Image (cartoon, rainbow over all chains, first blue to last red; front, top):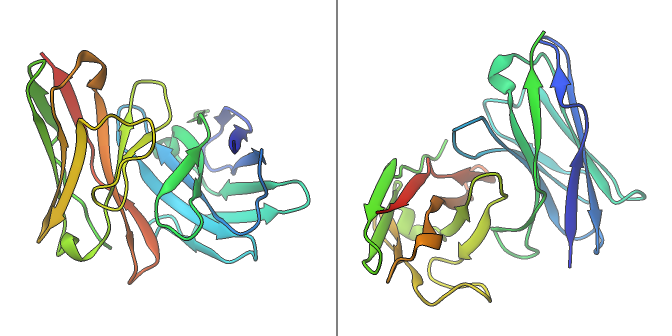
Length: 118
Length: 108
C-alpha cells in the first residue's frame, strides 16, 4: 500500500518561500505522476501542479510564475517550492499520486497546514 | 482554464437520495471522478471514470455524465455520508487537473 507523507515548516513569513517535501513509501516514485494540491481553510481543493519521474512538470496557470516542483528519485521524494507567499497562500497542502495510466488521484497524504504570517 | 461548477450545498433526509451536479463545458466528453472529504481528512475516491466504484465504496454511490453535467447520486443516504464532495477531471487541452467547487452534503 502506497503511503505519502508531507513535511515542512508550518509557518512562513510573507514574501518568503514555502518549501514542502512529500515522501513516498510502500512503492516506487517511478512511472507515476505526482501532484501537489492545496485547500485554504474552509475552501475547496486547488490543484497546484504535477511532476513525472523524468522531471517533466506542469503547473496551475495562476501559480505558474511562483511554483517549482522537483523530484528526487533516490529518496523517493518530491518537493514543492512556492515563492513570494502572501496570506492568501495559507492552506493545507496535500501531495497525491495520479494512478498510473489514469487521470484520478488514488493515494493522498494527510496534508500539512502552512500558515503565512509575520 | 476549464471550470467545474457545483452547488455549494445539498441537504437530504436519511434514507432518501442525494444528487450532486458538476457542470462544465461539454463535460460529457471528459471522464469525471468524484471524491468525498470529511473534516480533517484527505479526500477519498468514491467514483472514477464517470460511474465506476473503487472497492470498498457502497453500491449506494453511483455516477453519470452527459452533455454539460456530471452527477453523483447517493441512494439511501446515511448519516456517515455527510461530507464535502468534489468532482475532478483532467483537461487534455491544457494537461491540467481541475477540481469542482465542492458541495457540502448535510444529512438532516
